[in-house]
Structure formats: C-alpha cells, structure tokens
Length: 271
View 1 (cartoon, rainbow, N blue to C red):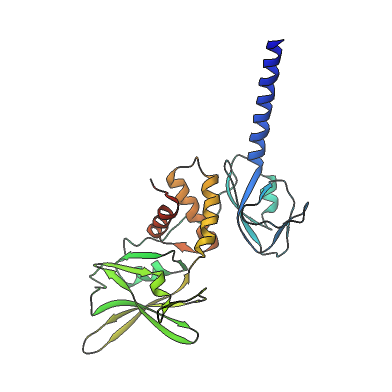
View 2 (cartoon, helix red, strand yellow):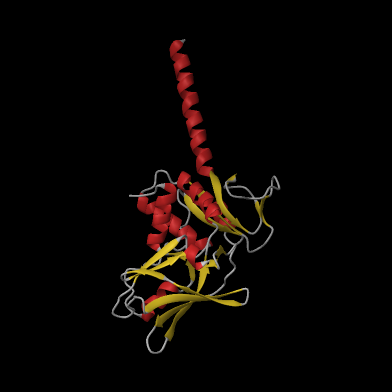
C-alpha cells in the first residue's frame, strides 16, 4: 500500500513538473509594446509585463504595432502583424533571432569620417557618453574644443562639451540644461556636432548632424528588468548582446561602454 502511494506521489510530481515546464515554454512576457495589440479572447491590451500563450490570437488595432516579447527558454521575439503566423506556428526550441546586436564604439575615432560614422543613426544617450578621439586630428584644450548646437523653442542653443585629455564627454544633464533649468521631456529632433578653434579668428567647423535619443530611463529600467528576469541562466555576454539588440529595435544604436556602465550601475550587471 505504501509502495503504491509512493508511486502515485512520484507520478503526480512528474506530471506536475511536465505541465509546469510546458506552461513556461508556452508563455511569453511582454517587454514593450509600440502601438495597440489586444488579446482576442479577453479583449485586454498587451502591456509591459503581460504574460500570454504562444497560441493566443492577437488583434493589431494599429497595423504598424509591434511588441517585444520574451521566454526564458526560447528567447526574445519582435512580434508584428506580418510575422504573427510565424510566431504561432514555431514549435522549435528557439524562435528566429531578431534585431541588430551592434553597438557603436568610441575607441577608434581617428578622423572626421570616423566621428561622423560614430554619430550616424539614432544616437542613444543614457547619462554620459565618453568618446576617445585622436588628438592628431582633433586636439581638445581651452582653445580647441567640441560643442553641440540645437534649436529649442526657436532659439539656437550652443553647448560646449567637456573633455578629459583625448576623451570627449557628452553629459545628458549638462546638454539639456538651459539657464540652469533642465529641459522637461525634450523633443529635439536634430543636433549638430561642431569643432571650435579659437585664435585671431574663431573657426567653427561642422562635423555632423545626428538624431539624439534620450530614453525615459524609468520606463527603460522596467523593460530591462523583465528581460533580466527572463535571462537568469544566460551568460553576461549573452545578456549584453540581447539588451543591445532590444535597445536597437526600439530606441537606437547605443554606445557600448555607456550601455554597460548604465546596466552595471542600475542592475549590478557585470562580468
């Protein structure tokens, strides 16, 4: 009798484990939604932290809507109305990889072309970006320095950038402070990087025009928190690659060291 009871308990435990495993493999958690996507069976909207089954029918209220979703075993997926069928029909352990895992790096800025390439695309700034630049092309001192020019409420703003030896420093708070006040919810679509040489004449050279992206850091922290919770078993490099890819998908191309520093400060993520 005792043996039969033990077998029943073991059978129930094994069945429970299998069901739990199947459930976890089938469930995806939402990291972020852009637009409006509803779960058809309930009419509820997908939002950050929403968990739903892979076989759910979803309604894309806005055709261009997309959602970043993640599963601890199967990885992250960028869900759109165009790939919904692919997502639902996939039975493999891993869904197709999504996004671009590249990050801009500032260790080889040797000339103006390198600098222009570094800033191209959506330039994501978390708090402070440091860019090492060859002094042979762009020396930085009291008379020679970089500054950024942008328009705010039809007023031209010029911001001299800090530096340390051969390293240019872009500080978000300083960049977005005007007359001692922080610009709330900045909507600046364009910035110009300029290089100034002071002497008998002031020579200001345009370097490049770029699109600055200043994420809502509180919102981003919530999004990254979900990712890290779902990637507990992943290596440091895998986590960095996946987060970099996600930031690329929804914000822009971050600077690698700036991203790693921000993640270490806010999540203790380190090698």
